[in-house]
Image (cartoon, rainbow, N blue to C red; front, side, top):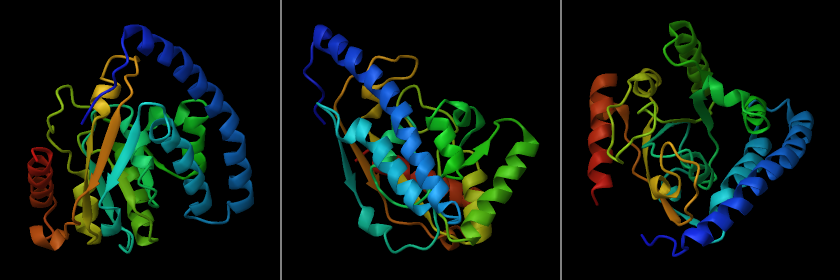
Length: 246
């Protein structure tokens, strides 16, 4: 995957335009989201609002100069019932890349993200699922909400590593997403994101625009792991690790 050819001066100018645009547009686009919510709050799946939010989030990467998002394998998931998407996590930009898949889903995200002005408030409107890491009561509430969502026909999106990888290698998975999938007997869809770590590495805010790819792999039935969440976790980790090497 080719990176940007912008030099240091070009990257500086790019960032001087990109970040003010992002902050300004987030402020302005929150109000249409609020209107959509007010008109469709009766829909428990927030389908119209999620479509708007997906376009909003994806355009910062998919339509940005010198950047793009190529999605592969979306057709594998269009006719799926509720499922659990799990992805590698390399950068804050991962979220923008995932929005480009344009599939209905609920994000499971750390609670702090929900308090980010405008973007976080939109997460509340979309009925995404918050969790306070390390807090057992919050984790239990999250699991109950995830179960209700799946039983209601909504899919979930989880970063099972819990935090971003420093070196791009797949870290150990937490078990929660696989426990939910095994318990509710819904497929797990592995997602491989490539390129975001180079756009916005961990511990920096300097954008380096370039193409990103998002690959949706074949769904994995928890039956293949005898509905055992630990076996399912290890199976999915193995499949994703192999896919990331190809």
